[in-house]
Length: 208
Image: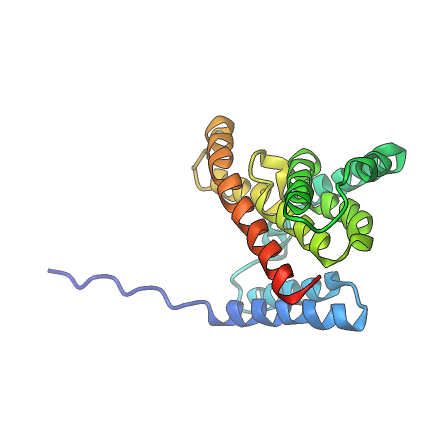
């Protein structure tokens, strides 16, 4: 019988580049540099290597960058910015709970999750972090939990979900919105509530 096919070699260069890019995010934040420059550097390294090894062409590199998706993200940011400037920030400030108790943190995380599902988690975190910064680290961390765990009820909830759906469709896998939402309704509360409880317990131990 024929020998089983050898498993593909791990993409070490790509993994190292991704690791360096993530490290670049941290370094850039410490130095006050926009993390986008670290992301651009990582993308350029991978693209140049693929071009030099003739595994890609300039056209395939441009297609991989998904210009239409980038335009969508830009348009989303413009629309959300306009909504925020015309009353959304003030409305959120009025409904955000104040304090560091468990119910308050649950409320902040739930609000962040709902907003992320409505307008996407990236604009949501940019809107909510300035509003909660004065309330202490507990509220800020609750926002981060909400916008990262919560946006799994709508396709537009997070950029990661949009990218996942795009890649899944390219490979012939389609997930209906109904199934996606049902799974989100089951998993989001099951993950978000324990995470907030763990945050509250941690704050009681270390203070904050």
